[in-house]
Length: 102
Image (cartoon, rainbow, N blue to C red; front, side):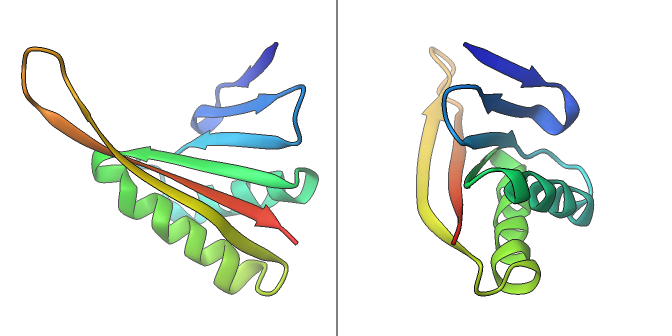
């Protein structure tokens, strides 16, 4: 069973201690503070982004791990993929960055 929060495409699952955040083109520092507050209550946060939002997700991961929670968090896993639209041939890159609290 999943519980959904509309702000910034955030999803939190009831059965696990992690949160999934879909990154868009919102201001990076606002998203970083939101991720920081979620990471305070969860052990793991998953950042997901597509297309032009990928640099934002990478910047947020760097801000969290190198500035805000330096020594208390780390990047667990990075998954990069490409999704193609059926019949059109247009391809969109996706990224998933897992941040773990130490």
